Image (cartoon, rainbow, N blue to C red; front, top):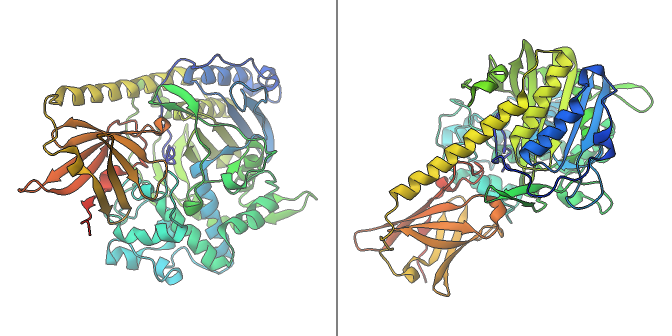
Length: 542
């Protein structure tokens, strides 16, 4: 989701409204009080990050900056958990979410270097059972297509199979792709997805003979010295230095977000890491795929040819006008997606980057290859404006670019986004016929409904009211309230989801329910809640 890996797939994604602090800001930690003496270009950077925390109500931020193979800055700001004294530092673990995708792409590149696969191989050559919802796409899908968001799937298609956490296995999710609708043209346009990175994970396992978890641990984490990085939240240890993530329930009230695991689509997201460990990852890539071990000896993790393949545009992305004029300095001249990496430019420099979104945590990693500069920003609140503002401030400092008031620019963008959402809700209210009750007794809407790709959704009557439950997703339980006619509103009991939805029943000429459809109510809802793709048909009672 922002989860979506956000959510967050492109730099200006802004996932949560700007609010005043829900709780009093904690006293500055020793790290935050320290000056940025490491590099004079970063004078005032600490104060800027603290301003970002306050402006966007972010409990904790960690930042690291590398240049020419060395760490020039690494620091934490704020508490690991609100109300507790432990401070975030450079070794604090956060979910890096979709920044995992670059690890998946690198893993496949390493296997290509070893001759165990080619990025031009057909997926069915490695997974004979693999099927998309189109015979041609099934036959022609290449491993590279799994990494480039050009499959013909729509934005976030199939995400409900694993988000929120579901009971499906990785292979079950992949096998259900045969029923996920294809709404675009194969290789015709960019549409961000997560589900195909789960398929890529299975290709890695087939080609390497290892689990994806073991591959990452033995082939990437251990060689690079990423000693505290964890494959998933399930692997966090009791004494680990871990940040608590926070979400704005109902887009306004800050509360802890639950710790989430995506065991069934780990190739798309799931890794927990720190800015210190991620600095090693950035330096390896900035060195052309080479790293230096503890004894000072150089080793190659991935070939330069394969790295350049990952960093070459596979899927072009149209460049749109920024949402507010103040963000125009960040507007790129080109934008595209390579293999697990976003590609664009800033002030004449090529950028290789990605963002990540997770319950309560969002992040951005940015590389400037020609200048050997890397910036990693990890945060413990679901607002992309924070990581973008910090990243752009760091880039301006390191590149010695003209100064831009990024705090003001992103604050205005968030305010506009919230205003647009409020206006959208007012339109729904104005169009509502308040005195238009459901056409059927509530009990008639109860029953099991089946979608071809997700499975069963159960609506039951309890105490004269309707309750909906997604059969494979424990957190998707909601109260169903009449809205108008045969349209209802689902209000999820887990308010941090921020994903309330309209539920529309379609009746036949005899007044029997033929189908139910859903759609998110708010434009702020993360795209991974792909309710609109569900086609819920009533299951006949035996």
